[in-house]
Length: 631
View 1 (cartoon, one colour):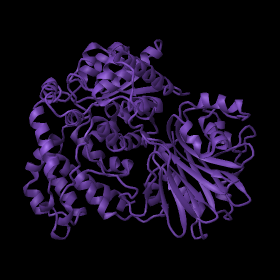
View 2: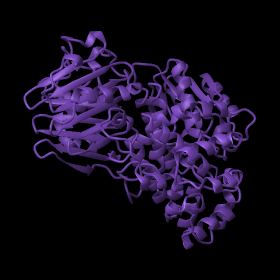
View 3: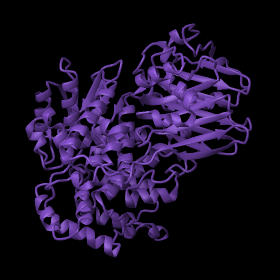
View 4: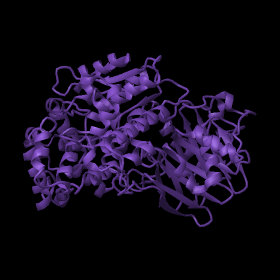
């Protein structure tokens, strides 16, 4: 929905006005509809407008914010400042402008995201005596905090990252949603504590100098990991993890981070299969229905796979008289192209279908822009496909899209989920299970055997020969063992790989001022229910996401329901990179002094065929480094 930033000055050594303005400008793309600021001291709270604040907000008598002071004229006797970039989605009036305060100006918030059950929460709070001035979910978050304190987080169904100034208790309350759809980063130095939606806000404002965290650098290049710990690739900038909140005490200038949510564990679901499928259908339809709450048009990404097709089908069921805009990346004549499937779904729901076909030349043309907006190097060219799909949506005047991220991690959609189930049920029936899955996983026996051997022997991949002698110790990959049960693997993926996909989702969409909503990933009722179901019910007779298919089959074409293959959001990496070998090698050589460029150059074609993502990670990292070194 928006971009947020803020600074707490500890010793008056930070120029709040110039720094917060630079932070806000760095994340302007996240909120092109308006800009707002609020400055605070122990005695004063001063809402401030800039040249990008809509004229109607300035001095408005109908609005709590009521900014009468311009940023240019604000005095410098404050020690805390909030910034907000607005993407208008709910309550498009001036009432939705932020930072927002309550009617007594005791509580202030800068908020990013959507709390989809805000209507129900607002009614609950009204019954408790709360008075509302706006129609926004932001005001609901404020009043919920006043009523329930930190426990308000248990009430929210949605995606969010926010900072809330509690003047009564002299503290700052910051929180992030359960799975990490919306980002929140912070830095803490002797001079200031600061937060923002993106890393670039710290770098472009010069609040933090660009310096690479070496351990995170090699963890990405060798293992493909990003944001696995609180530390980030940017030295000096940390991430507030999903399901956590942070409380900053202004009296002591210290803060504490706490976890407020854990996935359910070992809660046996005693319902029979038909009852479970019916419950899933009800919760899925409700999750999508909640995420259609918007005062602007909602579109949807459509790959042609099961998950995005289900969303399009359920939306048609919920809004039979509306034609939804659907957006697809297509790759004609490629083996992984899903154009025909996507067209079937579009025809089935009567959608307004738009396509884009990214090319290698366009990828190399846009790679610097892609890394800049992603904030981090990319590990897959599929991120570029997603980037172009969001651009296509923006060109068609869409500000909100639905997407299918999270279904695989709830229902069991990846090949390694089958293997975790086989490992869990290892015995006489395992061979039959593998045979049942041969349509989904070709060479299942061989792949499962390799996984068991790798885990037993602790095997890993060694890239040391491609690094110079002083960095060879970083070359060996970590052996991430497969979990001993399907549900445990799904939990690992939900808080692991899914979070990485959601980071890309957020940056791809927000680069074009689009809010992406993910009903599978962040609907608390759906998520909690799925993790109460035994793993062996989620994959059945070799069919992935069995429960999801059965719960949604009436909303999708039979060809989609019956699909056994899984292609994913792919691109032709080998075809794209090989013709550009010289450019890729030169870029890596100019930026990465730890790479043994001669060995890499000799093995380039072989690596592209066997380990293409290693080449891509080196190249993307070198481009990312160049982009942020020049920032």
